[in-house]
Length: 448
View 1: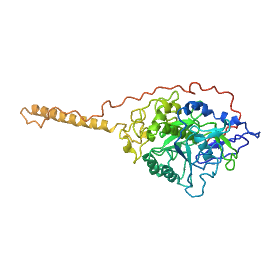
View 2: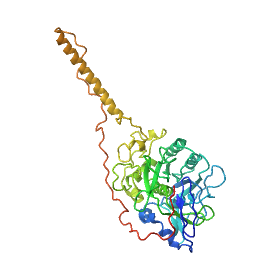
View 3: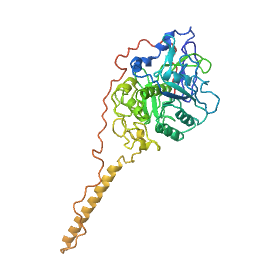
View 4: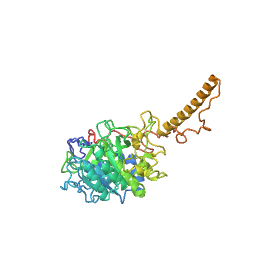
């Protein structure tokens, strides 16, 4: 993800799932409301409406990242004792600004009179987990599950391991009713690890107009999008490139933090739901841009989150697995294999391999039964014809009674194409018109 400093000047930093940074021209410290006014996503979400239903109280969100600054004014009192797999205490002694920024978008509560960053779910507690070196993130996932996390936010990608390294940890999380949310990546390529692991809710980034961010990674694993362009976050003043209380940047990292926060809100309001059922509420209330006719879409997934609707709409819980892809240890959770619309989802979403011919196994069986029946009829006809040709009676081969119908596919096969109501493309009703570009920090590149 790419960041920029808000109050003074900024440098540039990039992480594996990074935040790209921009700079604010040297100037006096920003006014107290510059930070809050710069949080355009707050207006998009309609925070007052959202918070009238849920602030996420009672839910713990683990942030597996570069550590979270527990002393930041916008996060004081929001952190629980965390974990560094190497025992160096870096979970609360951040090595850069990234982890603090993600935590602030989830649980930031601002300070003073309307100052500082507020997150989407300010009532939640943050469980900071240092990402570690090498392939230690799966270890962090298990630790977070064992220490009370309900949602695990991973605004990171890794090049040192593949999805197979995360399968056991993600399955462990789902078995304990913990949702894992991860960013798709920031290089406009395929969905990166760990977001491409079965069972993980993979997230892409959109801008103020709900248009996909140009560097947002995409593919069949992508499930949801969220605001991820020009996002203001908190930052530590002692480490990282910002060296300032606040940064601004782009990326799937920040979008992931918003989706994790939205999931926490839903868990707080509906504590009996499974991770798949929480994902189901987010999916069924997402906004799909015009022109997208097949869901999930490779770039948008099922659309952009709307937390208030996810909290308040009358949505049946549905199968326990919901739209989350099945892994070996979680497939039995939902034997129906049904996706968020009551139909079997896209094979990549459900983790189901279709035969290369495109025919379903039940349909193949039906065809096979039909062929057998046809062969019996052909044999009988040929025998009768041969007998007549030779002019004498011949014993007929065994002729069964009425040929039973072939084994057919389930009723209604093949299924009719899914119909999806097109929702308006653009900001929701009541969203204020954008004025001249925000004159706070310069916008940087892009986060992951």
